[in-house]
Length: 425
Image 1 (cartoon, rainbow, N blue to C red):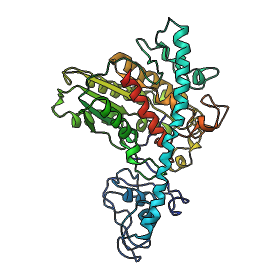
Image 2: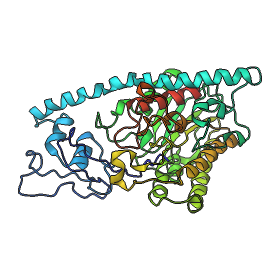
Image 3: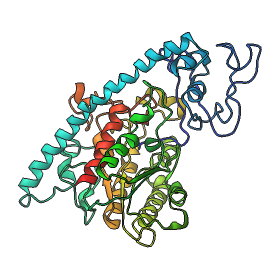
Image 4: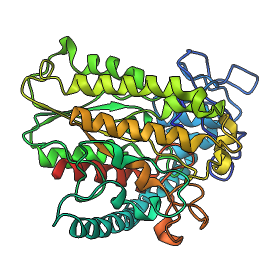
């Protein structure tokens, strides 16, 4: 229930970006963002004309490739964007932009991996108890890792323990099906969570703080000399896996021992959520999502493609409502077609989570429990009636940015740490 929208639409925030009206933005259609008008020519000032090839006002801005283009696409406010992106002839606005990046020390929020600590703490404590109580230090089962979420009257309750052959990591952040050593190449696949949304701090995360960048640094230290390549794309869906794999492994054979990491599936859920499909109505979509995901996992784990070995780690699908199914809990969601209560959401997300875990077990890949760790860090985190409530305050820190569907700085930091926990064990 991530609703990681394909070619996502953002909202302009008046207090931060010059009071521009909210818009849906940029496709790769090649349309100009703002047409010529009496206000002047491109770059001449706030009333001027800004032509941004490749970024139109519908349906989204992820096609825009830099800070300024993305900002203008989002807000249609040229002067504010010159300031926010520290552009040249904006002189003064450029300086005004520097304090904006003074918002970048919103990455001072990254030590809000203080928030990460909270989740890690809770997870580790639970593991210790489960491990000791069970078979003398045996790995915990999945549900015992998340008693705070799946205990009591849980609205969302995947039957994870019914999935056979699952080995949970002692850290409770993912499974432990692979011995990941001697990696010579890392390939990132996936959607905008992996690629990174348009970097407009403090609204969205700066490029160097996206989980892929943070994890890339960790993996470079863990596997010195390994090549690290990115084939993820904004707006990608599960059926884009094979295109990304073919781009990353031309000819279908990679002789270096390879680790493939991905987040994928949220964009497939948007149309399901928009039409508020029942579980019966969504079943065909669910089956196709799982079939495409399984095909990608099998391809990566096939020795014919990676003769010297491969490992595959993927995330399950998080969501921003903290199991409330209140699609409008994030203010920007109403502007992109997600509003009201989606009563069938728990059943749909449960089916996908169970299916994702089955793929990890069957293919001996690994899955991080991103949905579980982000539960209680969404836009209803302060609601004590929800199963994800973590107590409020720092323990309920928001891990989503203002796009509703992408992680915030601490959210990205936590995802990087989750993937690394699986690599290290």
